Image (tube, rainbow, N blue to C red; front, side, top):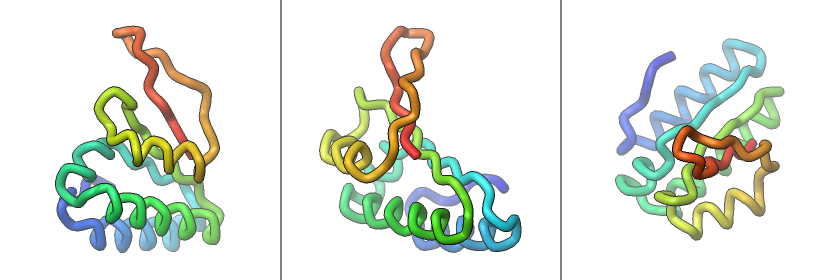
Length: 102
């Protein structure tokens, strides 16, 4: 599907919704959350992820959010851990854990 301009969260939501509609569900992967937060702020990114999660859930899809706790806003990490289910911790080559939430 390609990428979406990180400054245009509404485009991200629209593209994700269209993808889920056209594929009868599917898997949405949101990466570079720290970049989204830098351009849009924590509150807007949280609302966007909430919307994506709701949309994926109602349309039979799965949302995967990839974050690196070393560089992602701690408030966003806390929200993600509260609201989404944990995937097993994945060890990167530097041996620092990344966090995958769905």
